[in-house]
Image (cartoon, rainbow over the protein chains, first blue to last red):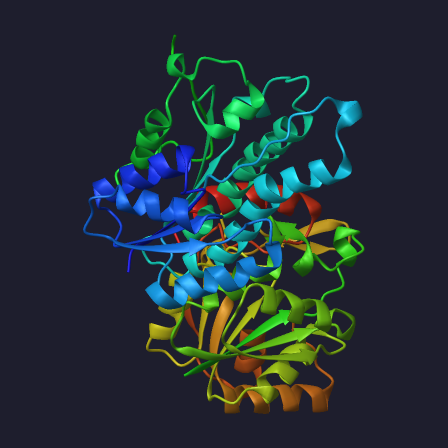
Amino acid sequence: MKTCIITGAGSGIGRAAALEIAQAGEFEYLALIGRSEEKLSQTKSMMQTASQVELYAYDLAELEGIPALVQRIYETTGEITCLLNIAGYTDPQPLLTTSLESMRLTYETNVFAPFMLIRECTKYMRLNKAGAKILNVASTAGITPRPGWLSYASSKAAVVSMSQTLSEELAEYGIRVYCISPGRCATALRRKLAPNEDQSKIMQPEDVGHIIRELVSDTEQCLDGQNIVIRKKT
Amino acid sequence: MFSVIILAGGTGSRMHQSVPKQFLALAGKPMILHTLERLERIDEVDEIIVSCHPHYKELLQMHIDAYMLKKAYKIIDGGETRQQSAYLGVKAAKNEDIIIHEAARPFVTTQEFRDLIQCPAKNVTYGLDIPFTVSVRDGDAISGLLERDKLVNIQLPQKFEREPLLRAYEQAEKEGNVFTEDTSLLIHYTGEQVHILKGTPNNVKVTNTVDLIAGEMIYKEYIVGRD
């Protein structure tokens, strides 16, 4: 069954991407992953789709459980076609107040969980005759200096690098790896980074969700392996 | 069904590396994995025997597990010479149809394995025409030229019947003869014919450090998206 796994599907860009992909109907099975079952249910209730949608309430900071989670999805569907690593975490602090715990939690969610998901999904994606796609959401914060956002910005730089490396490493298996770096986008995460910003004037999650849908569609074959910056002119 | 023997007993002395070349990273993964992953896709192969230095057997098993390779594997000790390693591999094989390949040729394609299997001849090798002049030397002087169109550059993989090949190895061992590859040994001791399939210049043997650098290009241009 053509399957798409979407992390962070309970809000923000993850929810917007899930809604777009559900509407496009290219996948028969959508596995929505998020910490809150309630928020995932809200996302599902907003969908109008013929695809089968299943909710996986899971905290991706629990890294050890990720192999079993992916295996459970694979055993249900018999195929993993697409993985969208969208879930993110931020705790913006200047260097001198950034605790090791904060740095660790940021990297667990933004780097280690995507790494684990990619590694586990690749085990099954390699078996697909028609290939597979992985899309990682980084950030413009990962490619320009952001004083006060050390943990978040550096973790997103790691996502860019991981994506570019894996784009080459997994090409032999027909697995395309995409990386997008959205600029300012009106999400709860962005609110933590820029509390006083007027979010009505910046890019909306739906704008990014639409681009994600385009990238994971079967017709897109050219933009993998690049860091695709998404900014809205204001 | 076919048993494939992979010769991976080298110690990498010519590459001046601490790890044998078959475990050096090529395009991000150990060289030997390139061949093993391709064999995984061939239904006619149900046994893979890797002849390996005892020191590296555990490392190889770890890679086989990490890459979730599902064929039946036997990892055996290599011999003192290439010929002994091949002999031990053939002896350990359960099938009458044998393919011999070497880990240092990571650019063999799945299709090349398939063509070898489907070729109706019993004994088959890949071979390339020789595009350069080959001379005979007498000390420091040239004493003559060889006729290029009568020569072939032997490439692996090769296909054989197990029993005649085993007899040839045993005879060679008894007489103390050492051959550098198995078609010449087979022809010498059994007189069997060996058919030549046309190989490609991409299926190079990685021998020196420069081959690894060139190999990255061959991998990108020739393997990715084509095999």
